[in-house]
Length: 355
Ligand SMILES: Nc1ncnc2c1ncn2[C@@H]1O[C@H](COP(=O)(O)OP(=O)(O)OP(=O)(O)O)[C@@H](O)[C@H]1O
Ligand SMILES: N[C@@H](CCO)C(=O)O
Image (cartoon, rainbow, N blue to C red; front, side, top):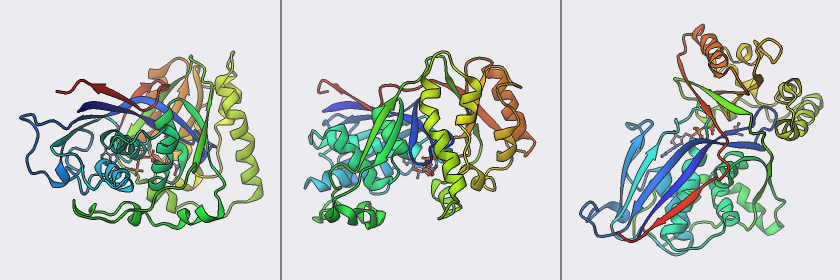
C-alpha cells in the first residue's frame, strides 16, 4: 500500500470569530506512507512504524510513533476499531513546512493528518464528517480542524449532544491520547467520539483577497494563549464581537469589496486584547494602519493563538508586510512573511499503485 495525505495549514478566528471561524491556507503538511516490504522499510520498528521527518522544527519533532502527535492520533483511530498497531513495515515520511506553535494551525493539520492516516491504513472508510468527530476528541475547538479537513473559509460549530454523550466534554485528553501511546500489545479500547460532535459551513471568499502571514521567530503554545483568556465576558464585549463576526463572512465574499467594512468586521474584544502580553507590540500592530492609511489593506488580525499576524489585502503585499515586520523589529522580533491563498480543497488522500 502506498499513499500520500496532504493537509493545509489554517488561520483561526480572523478577528472576532474566536473558536468559530477558520481559513485554510496554502502551506501543506504531507505524509508519504508505504506499508510494503521494500528495502527502505524497517524490520523491527516500534508499533511496526518508522517515521522520518523533513521540515519545520526538525530537532523537536519526535520520530517515535509512541510519542509523535500524528502517529498517536492514527493509533487512537485504529484502536477505536480494534486494530492495535500499524500494519507491518509501515513507513510514514512527514514533510512539514507549517511552522509549529505560530498560529497557523500546525497541530490542527497534524491531528487531521493523523485521523486520515488511521482511516486510510486501517481501511476504515470513515466519512469526513466522522473524521471531524475524531479530530474534535483531540483538538476540542473546531475552527482549525474543520478548515484543515474541508478547506476554504468556514464557520464552525459544536452540536448540542444527546444527554448520554455529554460526558465526552469531560474526557481528559490523556485518556484519548496517552503519551506514550501504550505499546503494541495494549488491548484497551479508547473512548470513541459521539456521532456528529461538530459541523461546518463554507463561506464564499473573494478571489481578489490574499492573506499575508507575518510569522515571528518565536512560538506561543496555544494552551498558554488560552490560559490568559477570562472565563467571563461583559455583555458589551460579547455584542461587539457578535456584530462583527456576523458581518465578516459576507464582507469577505462580496464584490465589490468594501475595505472599511472588512476592517471593522475583523475587530475583536474576546481574545486579542488578552494575548498582548504574550506577543510584544500586538496592540500597536493591530491598530497602526487601516485601509485609509495603507492602500490595498483590508484588515489585520492575530492568526489563531498567535504570534503570526494575518493581514488581508488585495495589492501592495510587500509594503504591508514590510510595515508590520518593522513594527515587530521595534520590539527586537524578527519575522519572515508569505503571501498565501485560500486552500479550497482541504485534506486529500492520493492513492498510488502498490510499490
Ligand atoms: N507535524 C507535526 N508533527 C508532530 N507534532 C506536531 C506537528 N505539528 C504540530 N505538532 C505539535 O503541535 C504543537 C503546536 O501546536 P499549537 O496548538 O501550540 O500551535 P499551532 O497549532 O501551530 O497554532 P494555532 O493552534 O494557534 O493555530 C507543537 O509544539 C507540536 O507538539
Ligand atoms: N481558536 C483557537 C485557535 C488556536 O488553536 C484560539 O484562538 O485559541
